[in-house]
Each structure stands twice: as C-alpha cells, then as structure tokens.
Image (tube, rainbow over the protein chains, first blue to last red):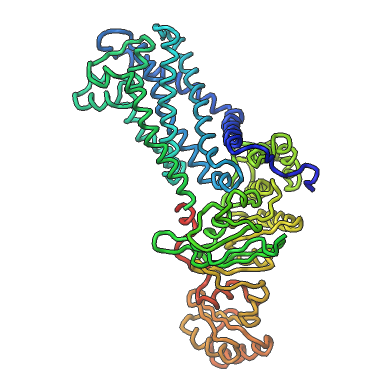
Length: 275
Length: 326
C-alpha cells in the first residue's frame, strides 16, 4: 500500500548532516508547541511584565541603590539574568515529560541521531531564551530603562545572558534525566528561587549580612548581573569584593565551568539509559 | 527473508546482583504474532527493550530481521517499530503533526513524511481527529496513533510492549484490529501482555518467561494441552472443606488438584469431562460438602503458568516498571 510513496530513508547524507537535520526537526517541534498553545505565549509575555511592575514599582519604591542611581535601572539586568537562570527548570521539565511519556524511548528506537534528543532541546530553549530577553528588554524600555554604554556593549551584555542560559541547559538536561517525573521537576522552583534570590539580582550584596553577602557575590548569577549592569551602563552598586571587581571575567568563567562539569554529567546520564 | 524475524540466544541483562534476563532464548517466526507472557518482573519489558536496542546486552546474542542487535543497533532501528507501555506521542501536537515529525525523523524528507502521515491516519481511522491536539484523544485513539507512528517505515518487526494496558474493552478491541491488519500486511509482531486472553486471541506462538528465562515455548493450544485437558473446578462454601473436596477431585483427575483458599476454589485437569463431573457432584453430595459452584472449563494460560512454576501469573511482587526506570 505504500509502494507509491517509497519508504526507503534518504541515505545519501553523512551522519553529521543527520545530526543537524534531526536536531532542527526537534527544534521545529518546540516552535510548533508555541503555535499550538498561544496561552503559553501570553504567559511568556505576561510573567516578565508582571514581574517588572511588581519588583520595580511595589518593592522598588522602598529600595535604595548603594552609591546612588535609579533602582529600576539597577533592577532590570537582574530581571534579565533571573529569567535566564530559571530557564533550566523549563529544560528539565520538558525533558522529563518526554521521558515519562516514552517519547525519548521512541526517539532512541529510531534510526535518527541520538544526540538530536539533547541538541534539539537545547537549540529550542536558546531560541525561547532570545524571545524572552526581547520581550523583557521591550518592557524595560517602556518603563524608562536605557542601555547607556552603546550598542556593542549592550549586545555583549545580551551575549553574556545567553551564555548563562546556555550553560544551564546542561544542568536542565542532567536534572531532567535524574528526576523521576514532571511533578518533581516542577518542584525545582523551590530550590531555584532561593538560589537566585541570594545574589545581586534584587539587592546589592554589600547591604546583606557579611556571610550572606559573600555567598551572594560569588553566586554565578551575580557575576552575570554585575557584568551586564556595567555593560548596559546601569547602576552597579559595586561593594568592592573580589567577585564584584572581576564580574566580567566571572560572567564568562562561571558558565564555562558549569558547562564543563554538566556536559559530561548529562552525556553520561543519557548513555546510562542504555544500561 | 530469514525464517526467524527475531532470535535471542541466551541473552543476559544484569542489574546489580540480579539478572533481569538470565540466558533468555527466543525464536519468532517471520510473519507471525508471538506472545511473550509472564508475571510482572519476569523480564518481559527488559527483553523487548534489549531487542529494540534501548538496552545494551550483558551477554548472549540477538538478531532482529537478521541484523545483530549489539553490533549494528542503528541497522536494527531502521527495521523495527516500538510501541511501549505508554502512548509515546507528543500530546500538544496534532495527530498529523506527530506523524509528520516522526516521518522526518525517520529521514523520509518533508514531502514523503506528509504523504505517509495522511496514509497512516486513514489506515488507523484517525482522519477526523487528524488536525486536533492529541491531548484530547481517547486512550484507544492515542494507542492507534502510537501504532501508526511505529509503522511509518513499514517495519519488518514490530515490538508491542503491553499495548492495551489501561485501555477499556473498546480501546483494546481497536488495538487488536489494528495489530491483525498489520500482520496481514506482513509485519512480524512480538507482543508482551499482562492479559492472557489477549495473547490467546492474537498470538500463534507463545513464550512463557519467568525470572529472566524462557520456561515454555509453544502454540497456545499445545501449552494448554500440557495442563492435561479440560479442568473441573469446584467452589466450596467453607474453605476448611477444601482438603476434603480436593480428595474427591483427585479420584477423577489426571493430575493432582490445585487449591486456592482465598477464593475457596479447587480444580484439577480431567480426561473424561462428563463422567468426571457427574461423579464429583455425586461424591460431594454424599460426603455432605456444601458447594457454591461446580463446572468444567477450558484451561487458561494462567493454569499453564501455575502448572509450570507452581505460581500464578498475577502473584508477583516487583512491578516491572522499576526496570524501566533503572
């Protein structure tokens, strides 16, 4: 019955070609999800806007930036970085949902490139991250935030934010392979929230108790926040500690270190599925 | 074409100190439905996952459509379809989008993937729901879509791991019809199931698996003959009268009777059905044993399993799902 279609796979391409093609097919799947669920786009638009209003105007009215400057100008790079940092939960939830429904097993039983299961997820999540940043930046511009240090510096800052998100994809994939179900992956918020709060996202570490300030200053999220504040020309509230003085270096070093640690962990977990 | 679509020779799969597969043998004839039956934790799912290249073997040798599972897993993957215990489809996408995505991932290219999706939607009676989200599908529809996705490349061998678990009778019927039509088109099916009647209905050959080993391999009819003909079954009112009732049955039975105190049931295979029934009925009345029910029945595969292992198929402690997570 299928003679007229011909079901022989296109065989005249190498493995590298299929690794890219299969990855792209799974990226298309992620993008189709947004098209099929417009509510999710509304949520994606709504959450940053509400967060900016909530933190910027409700809490922001009581906030002072050490060393002077507008709190909302100070806050925006923090919001950008926080959104990137929370992203690993989306990666983990999407991955574990596929695993628990047997979709990943189906992929693995097919003659496609096994790596595409991970790379497709990663590329799709990076595209989502770009969209999230664009929406956040537009919201920020509307409430008066400006990147005063010029376009190249601003683009570098967005690059650093995406670098943080990229490194956390691997944490997300690893966690997605580790946790038993989507519900548990959702609970990761309970861990992610304090981990993100104990940073310079909302408050300068120099205003915190010494020990907490030290933890906050060394937080990888803080490195990205402080570096992007500098690059956007926003108030930095530099407390003078080593990690704050070397934020630009750390904003590259931390994601690099996270990637170096979690890529092998995620790959090993993925291969362990065959055991 | 090879005579056996699936062959496993003494395959082993170890988890910690226990062997989920412990020298398991299997030979599935090309073009047939072969049932793989056993209690939970017997190794059914492990066997299917290993043959479908999802798990690496720790020993033994297996071929699917003549291709070695360990040496050329990629080669095997283009010849098989797998339908696991869950309907492995994307619930946000539509049925058509699912099949087109899987078709592209089977490397058919966009145009052929779309044509094939249309063809399969028609064949599995999903045309009306084709452009609706799978999240709104019934259990039977999801399973049919799942089967359709496994059939995209018209695989030589289709692995069905408990394809009807969790479905209502109507959904099960739908899946059975789909499986029958696949086999009519030349696909070989290896089927695992918890439902003995399901294997009885679909499979021409059955392998019973217990503790990672094949303990019997035959046609359903022959397996039932090993029990020794039809069974006489008596349900007594008082379980303390079970031994006495068993004595009565033993006089006419061709094998020692089995008792089940929980259901107050005693049963035994008999050669001469009617003579045995009348004699047992008279003897029970003479001895004053109160009987709730008495009758003859064809042996089920459960009886075969009980006879071979001394245990019932349902009475298994470890659920097989833990193997999946391991």
